[in-house]
Structures are given as structure tokens and as C-alpha cells.
Length: 508
Figure 1 (cartoon, rainbow, N blue to C red):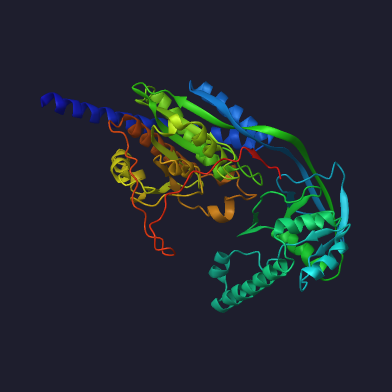
Figure 2: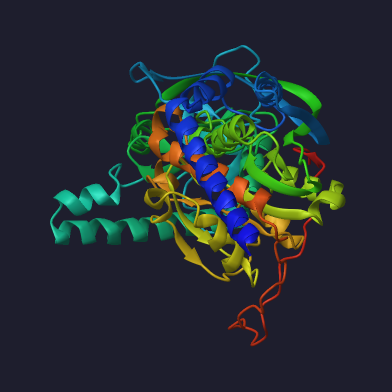
């Protein structure tokens, strides 16, 4: 009995010392700012299939090597290769003004030339027959087919300063305008992709949209639907200017010069880092974050912050805890934005790892400190997650709301790929920092939006959870809870099923 008590005291002392050392290293020798600078400012955005995506993967492997950590790029498929060039968009009539805008991902280029033309707004036509009759009029023009927003002020600004009557009036008018525009588009009989292709086939010079993200100066930037003519997104402010000038008959002209390169099909990779387990090398603790991004900004909070959190956590562990009981992996997944493809491919390709996963911790949704942790439907997750969380410093732990057993996520981020395969995988979910409006998939998702104190807290949390999971004498239970009854069918909910990765992407 005395030996058992002594052993327990010794383990408790070792655990406290290790946790204290993790906190000290993360606080006094943080690499987060430098990692963010190198990844976001130097490499830049990481659109799948772009040279920057491969550059980022090679950078990560080299960075891990500098820390004494083994890492590799593991091919899982191929994607349409594309490299962004310049976007020069100017109004040249009735006056000269440089416009804020950019080509969308995978947009065709103007082949080094400036293309000048008038603008036309897609009109409100009664039906698809009228649309087909009108369509030839777009030849030689740029077509605008986003709604002109009635206000460039986000709702919180109206709430702060407007009278209640004025705010309600604006919202009512905006709803009517939005419904009318949606009806205008639907009467063509085409979705937005088919509509862009119809304009292209009819000889338009390019298509112009404005995908406002409901905040000051911020637009969502996604992919082009055209194959021969450029697809351009223009800021709310400049789009509204062009729209009003066109609507009032002033016949504005714009000059567009956008450069890009088609690179054919290129290989796609996951980047995997590893610290081999000393006692149970075939059991795995996985730190998960995806590596690709949309390229309107530099992918800072989506998902640069998740990436550097996991890199910093394993850097700390390598220094403080170099001989883990279980193998610790970091998975930097490719093509999350196109459907969790990298993590789905990993799950398909490595059943020997998936069946022996102790836990997966995934961090995705922005720069904020972790405030939510759910059990993802694993019946006994409260026991081991609660045990591991107890070692986390109170100032970090107290901010985290837990939900057990929770329900399994079917998508949204890479933890879902593992959950569908029955592996205990959990989302370290952050507080907002206006993520959905200002940085998620936007042209403003850049280094300056990172809150490094929060990311540092997340790196500490992740490192401690990984340490505790690795040391735990028990293997985690994978028993699933009975899911709540589906209100629509009256039947118990079904566990998500694995989805196959798209192995050849970006092609029709």
C-alpha cells in the first residue's frame, strides 16, 4: 500500500511539473508570432492546387526538422493547379477611379491585356424565355448580377446609432429587395453557376459580383464559375458605385487586367508530423488542423491559427515531453475547403491508425480562445476528457463549456472525418471575434486579425490535453450513445457515415 501511495504521489508530482513546464515554455519561448509571419506573410494563402500550398507543406516539413521532429508530405490525390496573378480593376468612364476588387480563385486570366467595356445589370425579366431573348445583349460587356446592397453599414452599427423606426424600416426594405433579387435570378431557370456560364457563352467580357460579408469593407472570396472569361468580385462600395451609374444610364466603363496561370493537374498532400511513442507506439494521439485556405486574404484565422496552434503544441511537447507513451501525430490536411478531402483520404488510407486512435483534437474556427468542447456522441467521453481537462490551468479550463455526450458532427471540419469512422475526435471550438462576418473566407483574413494571447492559450491547452491523453493508462472508450429521435422521422438518429475523398478535384 505504501508503495502504491508513493507511486501515486510521484505521478502527481511529475504531471504537475510537466504541465508547469508546458506553460512556462509556451509563455516564455513562444514561436507563434514567427510561425504566423512565415506561413501567412511569406508563403501567403494556400489554395489547394496552388504553388503556395506546396510551398507551405515544404515549409512545415523543414520547420519540424529544425525542431527535431520527423515530418513528411503524403500524397493523397491531385487537383487543378492554378496560380493567382495581378488583379487591376479600374473605372475609366465617366471618371477614372481604381476599384477595390479581385479575381476569384481559378478565374481565367485576360492573358496580359487590359479588357475595357461597358457594364450591364441583369434586368428583371418575366421568365426564362425572355432571358434567352435578352442574353445576346451581353456581348462585349461586363455583366453585373449581384444585388446592390441598400447599406454598407453592418446591423450592429444601425442598432447603435439609428432610431428603432429607421432600423426596422431599413431591414424591411432590405428583405423586400433581397426577395425580389432572388426572384429575378430564379426566373432565368438557372443557378448562379449556370448563369455565369450562360453569360460567358453569349460573349460577355467578364462577370462582376459582390459577395458582401455584412461587415465594413469585407467580402467573401470563393471560386470562379466561368471557364473562359474572368470572374471578378468587387467591394460593396465600388460595386454600388458602378451599379448606380449603370442604372442611371451613365454607361460607366471599366478596365480589367487579371493574371493567372493554369498549371494542369498537380499532386495534393497532407503534411504529417510525428513523435513516436515509447511504450504504445501503435496507439495515436492526433492533433488536427487543415492547411489549405481560400485566397482572398492569407487564411490567417481559417485555418492558419489552427495550424500554428498544433505546430506550437507539438514543438513544446518535443522539448518538454520528448518520449511520449503513445505516438503523437500532427495532421495538416489538404483541401478541407473543398469537402474535408485530405482528412477523409487519411482515414481511408490508414485504417491501421484509425482503429488505434486514442483521441483526435481538431482546431479550426478562428483565432479565439477555446470555449466549447462537446463529446461528439461518444458515451464515455465525459470520463476521459474530464480527467484530462482537470490538469489544465484553471484560468484556461474555467472558460470551456462542456457538453456530454453531445451529438456526432457530420461535417464542418476535419474531426468529422474521424468521428464518422468511429474514432474519438473532438473540436476545440473557439469564441467568435466576429469570425463569421470578418474573417471566415474573406478578403480580410490576414495576420493582423490574430489574437496571439488567445492562440497561446489554445497551444497550452492542446499540449496538456495531448500529454494527458498519451500518458493515460486507459485506452479511450469508443462506445457510441443512442442518438436523439429525429423529429421528422420519429426514428433514432443515425451515426454519420464515412464519405469518400475527392481524389481528383477542380475538373468538370
